[in-house]
Image (cartoon, rainbow, N blue to C red):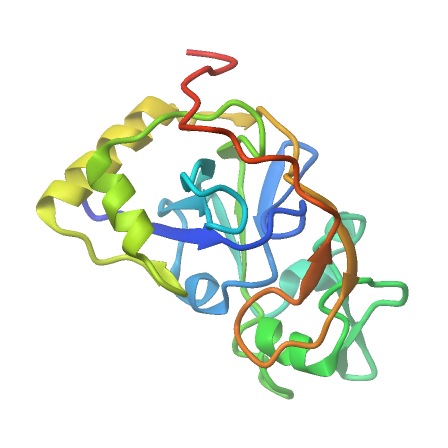
Length: 223
């Protein structure tokens, strides 16, 4: 699909919440509001580890968007209410933070994730039933062209690519074989509590991460 968009970005936190992988479904419901605003069904999202997780910027997940939910539909539908990233609820004509949420637990977090009331322009959620999630498990290697683009990427995501980078990303997607839900590893760490943030980064304090791998790991559960 030549017209599909390919997004990639670096994760500063991999705690099983953004993305959230559960019941053979990957969801991106919090964090990355600009990506969630523009990505649609058929687009590809690739998440690499930020330097905080792995100095080699390992591949954490690749997913094809199979469902796009808008206007807070994800947080209003009971079938998603058990998921770790479904942390908001509709109450008294406004979105509120659920009780006992230990991350993204401030009003600033809510506005960063969903947007300001009463419109909530950011309340879009991307779902995927075609993904590979590696977490801190064995991951797939990728080319030096992609690696250079990832290492130079700052905050935010990238969607505009040179012809050579687009070609390498398409090769990576083909190698990923995104036809079903594949969970090939666990998150790097778990969320323990939240801290207030004044930027677009995730306000989550995590338990200690395991030592980063020494290089790109090519071992894979299936080929």
